Every structure is written in C-alpha cells, then in structure tokens.
Image (cartoon, rainbow, N blue to C red; front, side, top):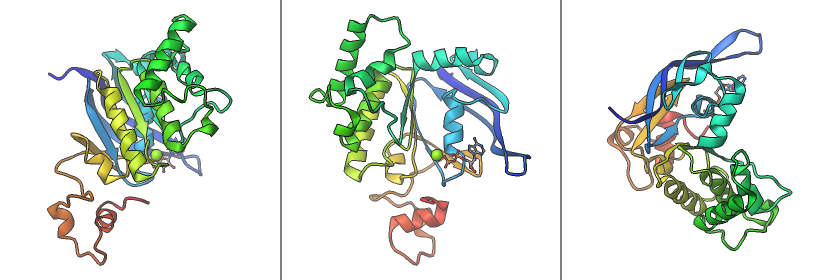
Length: 262
Ligand SMILES: Nc1ncnc2c1ncn2[C@@H]1O[C@H](COP(=O)(O)OP(=O)(O)O)[C@@H](O)[C@H]1O
Ligand SMILES: [Mg+2]
C-alpha cells in the first residue's frame, strides 16, 4: 500500500457547451497520488490538463465520482471547508504568477500564511526564510513590477512553500519563461517538495516532463500513465524515431506524435 494523499475514483467533469448541452471534458478517471510523489501531466492544448489540476487541487468539483484528500471525501465538503483545506495544506503556482502588484515580495509570500493564526512577526520570519530559500533574500521589498519574470515566479514558489504544504500544484510554471530560467524554476519546485510534499506539474515541455518519475498523459479528456521516456533534447525514443519525419527536430517528432505545442 502506498501512503495515499489524493485518490480519484471514477471522477468526471462536464461543462455546458455553446448550445447548453453538457460536454464531458474529463472522462472517468481513477488514480492515486502518494505522499511525496512527483508527477508531470502532459498533453495537447485543450486536452483537459488544467481541468484535472483544478479538480486535484479542490478548486473545482467533479461532476461525478469521488475525490478523497488524506482519506476525507472532498465531494462532501462545502466551499468553505474546501477553501480552508487549500489555505492550510495545498500550494499553487501558475504560469502567470498571480502576485499582488501593489505589495512587496515579502508581503506576497506572507499571503500564503494569511489564513493561519500565526502572529505577524512569525509570518514575517517564515516568509523571509522562504524568500531566502528561493534565492531572493536581496529582494524582500521589491514589488512584482520591479522583478524579472523568473524572480516573480520565485516569489510565487515561496508563497506556495511557506505554508509547508502537503502538495504543490504547478500549471505550466515555466511556460512564460526562457529555457534556462525555466530549468532553475523547476529545480526550485523540486527543492520546495524535498521536505516531503507531493509535486504535480502540468507541462507541454518534454524536457520538463522527462525529469519526473511518473507522467500522466491526457488526450481528449482521457488520462493514461505514460511509460518509457518522452522525447527530449537529449533522448529520443524508438517510437518517435520510427515516424516518417519530414523535419528532423525532436520538436517535430513530439508534434507528430502528440499534436503537442498546439
Ligand atoms: N469553465 C469552463 N466552461 C466550459 N468549458 C471549459 C471550461 N474550462 C475548460 N473548458 C473546456 O475544457 C477543455 C479542456 O480545457 P483545459 O483543461 O483548460 O485544457 P488544457 O489545460 O489541457 O489546455 C477545453 O475544450 C476548454 O474549452
Ligand atoms: Mg491549461
């Protein structure tokens, strides 16, 4: 038995389409996320990655099926109970950082602790330590607009890790950054999870996905475990090599294989 943190049993999600009829965006999905597990979610644009992440992170509720967090039935919780759960135990990092423009890096990180009963001095000290941890010890009083994209994402990671969450969800965390900065951000996310947190990262970058021991692939709302190594800049699997390529780059191989990068 793994030490399960999150379990989905036959979870689905449907949204109303233009004509008002419901479309099933996530087909019945059963999976378990263990404590400390690192998982990448990959798949073409529009395949349901963010939808799945919202359900896992309790930001949205399944249309049917059961979601358990640490044994508790999330589908039986009300909005307030779910928001308390997220505030106390779940960290989020998004592609567009979602920082408060009018306050300092330090205040932004303290937001991660605003639902705790910790005294302000303690929140201050913990936020400062989190900023040190992501290498921003010299940027406490800068506002987001005074920071680079990579630095803003570091603040967002500090805000997620300061609460010492059970799990960190990141939706395309490197999507708005150049390759080198993105690599550093991923290193920081792994470091942030080193204390025992689970880490779930949505990405369409095969080089990012290759760093995860477990990868889930979504296509048209169907989730599958991926086996073998994805095509990366340094490694190309046999499957991709067998494709009748007109281009020669791995990028082309992935596009042909997965319709990715859409
Ligand atoms: N709130 C919503 N209402 C209606 N359709 C939605 C909603 N959220 C997502 N969808 C649809 O669900 C599909 C999957 O979206 P999403 O999970 O954002 O994909 P991805 O993150 O893989 O690009 C898309 O077709 C999208 O238009
Ligand atoms: Mg998305």
